[in-house]
Image 1 (cartoon, each protein chain N blue to C red):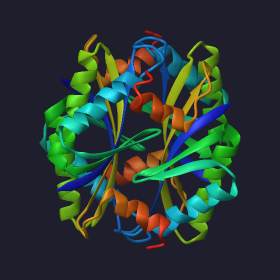
Image 2: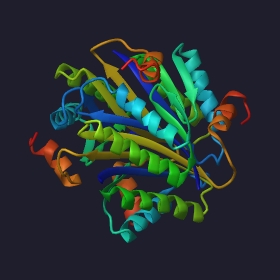
Image 3: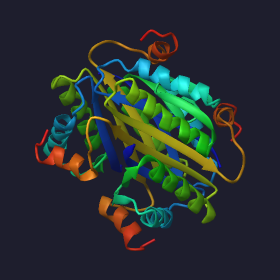
Length: 99
Length: 99
Length: 99
Length: 99
């Protein structure tokens, strides 16, 4: 089952700057070979369900290992059975009037 | 790794009433033996990471099998390494002034 | 326009325990006279759009005033024009098989 | 109070394709003169609290007016008092190692 995911990992108890933890999660996604795109409030990810969620679990493990005692993460997950759709397709369908 | 999750599954393309799909997800959580509590905008779930996310995947599979061509799901995931905490503990810490 | 909202306010940069800030937000909702129900990963709120979002803004103001330098909040907002629905109706439609 | 928001509007009861509703929300943000950036699972918005939330309310009104009987929207809202930060700053802080 293919998924398009939006991921936002928030470490708690490490002070006000969280960007080094977010950068580490980018590394995890990179290592997993998953298509991903950072935006200003999260990261879009595309891939097979199990691969994507295994990577999200590794993000939590890695961020805890960096010293964050607590993490709250928001995930949006989209799946569809009617047709294949990439992250770029979703953007094109809105911007190109391909409705 | 223990997680507390908030899950909100939204089937798309099945009309305006989605409650039978949500009820099916409750059944999936029940069958998985996971502690869970329905509220007005989702379901709180408590358990081990792998068990909880396996159940969420089954929710998607089951809701697609019921005929929904598209699903968008919101998940919040909390993990912590500083101490054990249940769903009830979280509520108590706010309501009992156990801050 | 009536809304049912799920609100989760996360103060950042105040250490690992955030429950006193959540308790303050409960007070804000109480003072606003809004129907609300705390759960393990947020608070359900019911009311008119403007009243509910004015209260959410006050939550941010109050939590910053308590000393939190940064806040990240998740909100789910439901509106419908086909019929009136309360928070309890939503729960009943799932649990009572009133689908 | 300045906010950075992530907005994802999901019309329910209008079939499986929702992109024309999302395109209409882009128009609302454009008309409001708000800085915004579409991604594969939502739209980042930057502006003053009141202007941003007025625009989000108009999105709901406009999408209902287009015929959607039900809408469920996810919003993430970030505010901070320690310093000014733009959407681009947030991306740069992760990608440029400006941690």
